[in-house]
Image (cartoon, rainbow over all chains, first blue to last red; front, side, top):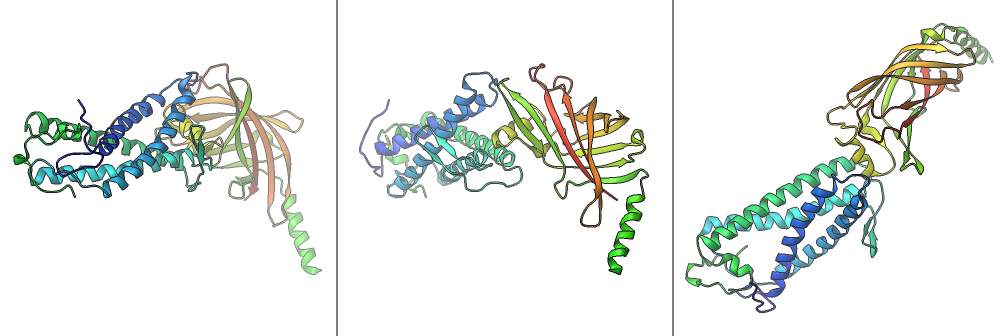
Length: 197
Length: 186
């Protein structure tokens, strides 16, 4: 299914570093949403009652680091041309940048729940990130609401993003999904040479 | 000297007044607390408090039966010294503070035990449920404060049946309340 091409992106193809970033975050975000959804309803006496949130917090911090690295990589990379007309590429670009903005806000809001009373966030048993902003009135409740709505927005966005990719792949047949699987764009004639800005 | 005598005279006049007086619970000055404790897994005491509440009482040491107490409690102010637990306890799983934004205690009958204590019967509304509770109360002390006021202080304890208040908790695991009330006479 995957074709690992060059390390870096080219105008017609994603390099494997981008592919790893894209798919690890796709799995990570979906998995974290499911984990978060599941863990908050666990019974107090469930073995996962503490394990689930600990894993959620730790992975969250790791994913923020991945997000940062991905942003850096993106700035340093060429973006392959996007398929679709002007409106479609604009919409796609807007959604991509919405993800780039909402994801760190999601992480930040999660951090503000855990650290609301001054306790740090333990990342596995590797290290602890200390609290910074604390003591806002009912900070944990407010940050919790924000965390939930951001997560929901990102998941809705991810669904739109996936549906659009499937539509391009199987209805427009312009190879959008194939491109994210590491293949070369099959038909460059259909490609609109607007760069993803 | 004259001023001191005048102050003393005024002070005596006020302390001499022992009829039922209205008191405002000194939450502003932080001389009152609503604390709770609960056994964690049956292994240790977990303690916390409701930090925002306000109330008044009428009190006449000669006529304890005439005592009336009204306290409004903000359930959102629950503090168990752990933000994530507080968030959970305030959520729909327990206090459901979005739905039940207020809690209240209103006394219905106060009976003196003749040894400085009293039994305070009253209605507690919590989690949208109103139930009779009984508070065992003790007078701690009363008198002038150094700033020209007059204060009276009490302590009380009661046990909440969590099932009766609609909480999904092991029924044998009660919540114990400890109340410390200092009122400033109006």
